[in-house]
Each structure stands twice: as C-alpha cells, then as structure tokens.
Length: 327
Image (cartoon, rainbow, N blue to C red; front, top):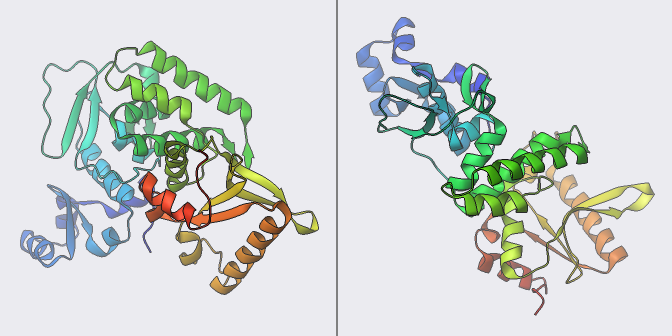
C-alpha cells in the first residue's frame, strides 16, 4: 500500500553520498546498489532505499526530491509552485513534476538545471515561510502559483485541498476562515491582472470548495460541471436511523440523485479501516446506502478514480445508474 509522507519522515530516508560514506558505504558499494536497484537515485548525490521509495505516492517522491535540492540550496531562492505544494501536503492530481521549482526575486543571473526549474518573480517576505527547515512559499502564494501554471484538473484539486486545510478545524468547518481565505485569494488574483495564467486562476479560485475531501472528489465536481449538471451540494446530510446523520459526497439536486466518490484506500488500507474487517465495512456501507435510497427516493451512484478521469467516463458511469445531465 502506497503512503503519503511528511518532511520529517522523508528527511530520515533521503541520504546523501557523504552520509552513506560516513556510514560505512564505499563508492563501489553505492554504485553496485544503484545498479542492482537496491538504492534509488533522487538526484546526483542523493539516494533512497528502493524499498522505501516503492511505498511512496508520487507527491511524496517529489517531496523527497525537494528535500534533496533544499539541502544544497544557496542564495535567496525558495521552493515554490507544485514543489511547495507537496511541502504543504497538497495533491498533484495526475501531475508528475520532473524538476523542483524554485522562485527567486532578483538574481544577478538565472538558469535552470536538469532537475531544478528556476522562476524570477516578486517575492515579498509575507510570501516566504519555513516548513520543517525548508524555505518555501506560503500556502496562499503556493496555491496562486499552482492555479496559474498547472492544468485545470490539478489546479482545482490543489485549490480545494488548500482551502480545506485552511478552514477545517478538527471536524468543524469554519465559515469565517473560508470567507477570509476566499477574499484573500480574490484580492491576490485581482492584483495580478495580466499575469501569466491569471484567467484560469480567477476561475479556479472562484470554483474551489474545500468541502471536497479527496482529489477525486474535486475532479468529479469539475467533470459534473463539464457535463452540464448544476453545481452539486457537497457533504449533504441525510438523517439516519437512531438519530445518526449520514453525509453523502454529492447531492445532484437537479436530477434528484446522490453521488459518492469511492477512493479504494478506505476499503484496502487497514489503517484507514482502523482494524475493522472489510466485510463489516462493506455491510455497513450497503445498509447506509439502502437507508438513503429508501428514505429520500433519490438515485444513488458510486464511482472510482477511473470514472472521474474524463467527463465521458463519468457520464457513462452515471448512466449505468440511470443518471443523466438535464437537457
């Protein structure tokens, strides 16, 4: 099972050539380990045990690359764009960066390398933070850069996740924090009129909604819009038995249907199931779905990652449940 990882976790796994040599490795043993696949090269002079690397989601692997670059960084550049995004635990939906992005405000010379992409842009002190020892752009600046430069699907997933991170307090959705975040993003976008990608940034920041809990939910929301559905209600409460409340990912009020994006991890990852047997999880899900169908008389559809990749794939999945966009 693949996993996410934090900067502190990965800092222990990213090892320099100097550290390996100090730990008893030789240049020959390093070369042989790389050749045999035992060690995986992150960048020149930085390595990770291949078994550890194999467990990481792509975002975590890129974060390892960020750590390796940051350890050797000099000058006034800071980690930015999607590379700062992974430092902030934002998703990179189907985007796999090959280079670490660094922004610098006014260098005497600027050049990118094989694995580092350098940007020149204004960088006020308020846009710079230190996360676990790594200088990177603030959450707001990071999202601003990402929604201008990534594709729309990845941009929406990142913007939703950032808003959720800013506004979710435990299990409480802080409406005041949401309003503050959205106002700040609007002001930043308005102040950057004419900048590269600002048209997309304006649309994405207006569309973003942190109540989407997973990247797949964010992209599903985008596909539903592309298919012509009205904006869905998110995390819709439905009164359950014994004074319980069920929450459904999407309420498609224009067609009287509910939708749920099912990430496989909640079924396959034992940690996420908190040790509950898979059979019990599935039985509880069936009872929940039956109750919601019976009490609301609305259709109910489930879909997975492969169904949300394109509007056409989601449309076909919904049609199999008798759900179609109006008109």
